[in-house]
Length: 531
Ligand SMILES: [Zn+2]
Image 1 (cartoon, protein in one colour):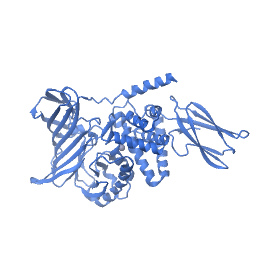
Image 2 (cartoon, protein in one colour):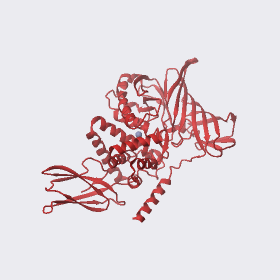
Image 3 (cartoon, protein in one colour):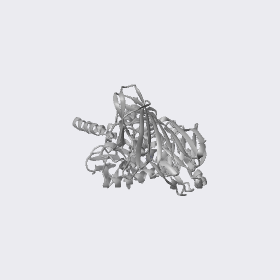
Image 4 (cartoon, helix red, strand yellow):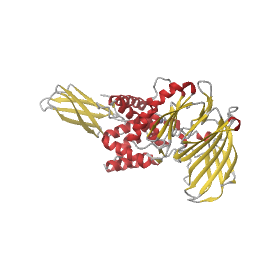
């Protein structure tokens, strides 16, 4: 037993120490970005001014930012000028990095202000195109690390910061962004200045601007937070109606998880490449999401859940993205269960279990998969469905009271901060007083799930059912509670057994011969029944 524990701890620490390879500078922390962006109808070239306030957390004489430089296709950003604390400095811009030399070494506790003037046609990240009505639109789409295509930044979720977007655009456009509207002024020559201020720290993956002709409606005010709808004018009626369901999940999450983190919530019809993109306080949905048929609630429940998980509580490393996607998937499912009944939740979990089983047959991998370095590939069944299933099993093991208490404590502790999976584990252990190391290890750091061969016999003389449970999956033996529903002529009852071995037998007293024994009738265990 000690040896197994030793190996387990060794494996656990080995996978915990692996990171997503982003080249981090632990000596700096961006506190605030202010981006001034000039947009035009005549060309796709943008001009930008970035002002960064950086806190030094250690000694350094240079600062590296992410910014895509000019490529052979003529797209990318050209840097014209860099000033540090209002003085010109040397800088080098290549390989998608902007390396800025400081005039002198800065030590811990010191601050640096940087100004960068740049221009170019964004290769990605700020999508300049036209919508389904042929109107020109500008929509940022930064996830996972595409912000660097149009704004100089530390393009990694571990460095969260305040952000201001000051957009100069033709007067006919409305501009929506993170935070609250600070200024909207029409200037001479048909130009409008729009300034949005986000005073809560957010990661670059969810910093955005959306610039288009919009119809805008105040959809509601919940607990002091305004909820806005932005849709294309042609979709005004259908969009206002479709997006009006946002208040349901917003209220439910606020009441059950903790207070919403941002100044407002805008639900925006957009040109994001994703079905929905959870940008902080400014969610973008694909333009096709507006149908007028009210089919967008589940998508909205997912993106709104991200405001709590992913945006406010943010993974520190891409390999822990299940803390964002698994949570959004599960809390959206919980909301559906709350709204439409437990049967709906069971149906969702059953469907996603089928998906996990199929996906595991093709590509067995752990949820925290430290072999993935193309972050788009993290958008997989493990991050979403299996992540959700881990939370579902956690809720089953802890019970509703401890589960919700753990979630509320986790959110309160890490609101507007960064986390790793170990922070979630520690919180649950603090709240429940239980050791969760095996649970986290087997479900998150190992591939697969139990594949069970279950058989039973009834001994009439002894009045006993003997149930055999065999784990036939390759590799690890899982430990889990298994509920068995026993049906006989006296009725239906459930028994729970703890499975801990490859082959295990359980004896259950029964006066009658069962005619059917159903494993996991309530859909609470991630397993494949291959009996
Ligand atoms: Zn998501």
